[in-house]
Length: 365
Figure: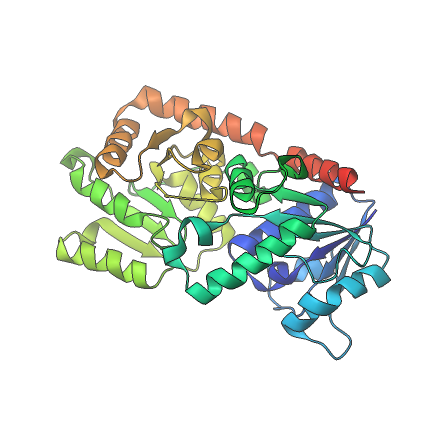
């Protein structure tokens, strides 16, 4: 089978959507090495992250050769190029499909990660919401099949775009391979951990307020891995006004191996987000042997499984209660760590996800 991919984010994005694109190609090439994988991208950012994909077995990287370049090529010329390359299936990995893909005769699949611009519209400018809505609507109406990265995302697609549920397959987001390989803890001060963008949807301020309510016996620092702008400034202002700067450590620029070590050493991972498409950091934490407190809304109960503690993200008191419970109950912590790791290894194993993807492709042909 010849499978084409919109690989723009694989080669140019180094957070969520880019990581998803790279891990998707990794699991498919590992499990199904006999296929041809064509990676279409308008440009390439050359670094250690993208270098392996330029020489990966059975992968071919394709860039513009004609007059159209950049986003114009990706949007308006890619469909004809895919047809000329005799691609069997084209997979839009990040919510979009090129114009004309259905007319080209090439079968198509699109992965929808979330519809946060509809569920949390205040986070997006009006123009951006309009553009995203056009792109998402075109993609879900044009695609022969849709992949949702959680049941919650599938439900949102149906709710906002009135798509036949039989057209949508749920295939969870793959996790970077290194998280499946346990590493030893290193000696360090005890700490709690948050990993993710620092924006209002992720609810870091909810963690800060919950920490203020914790008894002194559980006064562990929170390590924060993530970047933000206005909301980050809002959180930092709140922390400063309440004189609790010493309880927070902001980290950035970590390698995947350093992040894995950070998860492994943490006493607790806290992720009380209001809305997610999947909640990848929750799975990374569970695979790393770190107990998780997350939200009881959106897709997070799906990602967290039966051994994590779920809190109401709108109630700092409830977040605090779940944090304290996970920190003070040794027997519970052991069950959380062991059960969550077993659950994550089963539900989100690369072998499982790769075969689910291939099943979607086969249904599409």
